[in-house]
Length: 65
Image 1 (cartoon, helix red, strand yellow):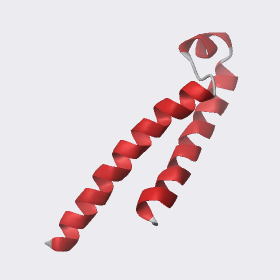
Image 2: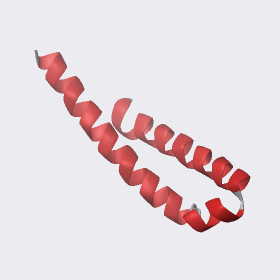
Image 3: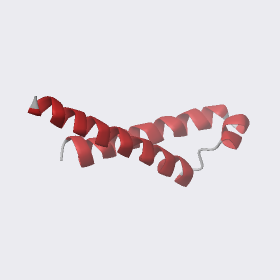
């Protein structure tokens, strides 16, 4: 029971941090709807970078701390 509680807490914390990072990283790297309309390939590349960076940060800060 304690393990499930702990895993639930870590999952919640990781999800919240990931969502926050996505917003911050997207903004700081110019990932906008305007870019999506203008240059879809660049937008996709940048979106993948942002998602990967957010995942790595969450793994180091929350999951593997």
